[in-house]
Amino acid sequence: MTMDPIPLEDLALLDVLHRVFQCDESIPIEPEMKQRLIESALVEDTDEGLRLTDAGVAMCKSFRHRIEADKRAAMIIGQRG
Image (cartoon, rainbow, N blue to C red; front, side, top):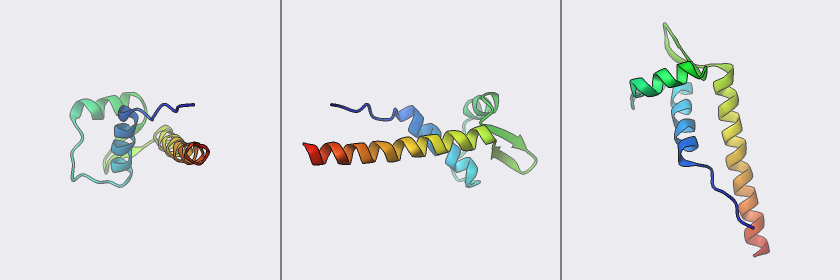
């Protein structure tokens, strides 16, 4: 039994969404990425800067649950192996 790892693109998206949530502007978000996030309704551009929408928060939670589930599954598979 093998598990497909979470795609790097998803991990990168989680990182960007986390930076938006933390208001971390130390690493700027590329304009194209920013536009895609806005168009996909994951973030909104406010007077105070970018902020996560409810959909963005849900996406972050989903990714975090997937990462935790993958860790647990790997641990169980390792114990059986």
